[in-house]
Length: 304
Image (cartoon, rainbow, N blue to C red):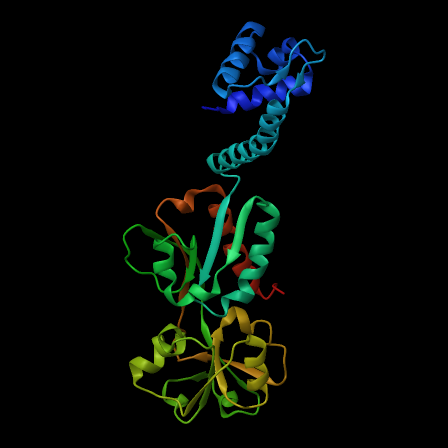
């Protein structure tokens, strides 16, 4: 028995309209073609699908089973067609994000909230568990965007610049660093450095300063939350190095001071990594614009 989608649409149209003529009009075919189609289905099934000489036309027990299949399958097909139309037009899709920058969560959430309102049909998610293998996850299509400050020359991957930022030192107002105009690599000897719980190769302070200078702090304390890092710094339990957009939120505090890292300011650039071509999808391009706009707000001190 070979059942096609048009057969299911035929059964449902006749059931809904109660007659061949009206069903034929609904389906956009002639009544004669519809009659031949019904006969063909019945010949395949080996049973009658309609109670003959009934007005309006009524489905037989076998016909009701086929109608149940039609009412289950046709809406699924309609949903699938609508989803494909959305993918083709760029209205829908998937935006799963991996973040290599731990501090970026606070910057990213306002971006995602604006994105969610603009693109309700896009499947949006953050995949924190993939942060340490983010680029491999991007290539395997496990995620669609990676937020990173370490662009790599990877075939099939493109990096869109988002914004530049400066790592700055955060210390208690009672700390020796408070009297300095800037903090050098040597100044970190003997200090407790409070960091996010990520590999030191992913931390700006090590990648840009301490490792090249072969300086090791007295201790490292790893803390998950930015708010807790700032609380420990205020209590003079250690010092931290954070992106400047984070410390904009605490510069009014009398307990915490921020200092430039080295005499010549250091800057880094944040990127969004995409699979080649994906950045041109309408919703991907909008995500990039929103990310840049939110970064400007935070660097001006306008962010939450």
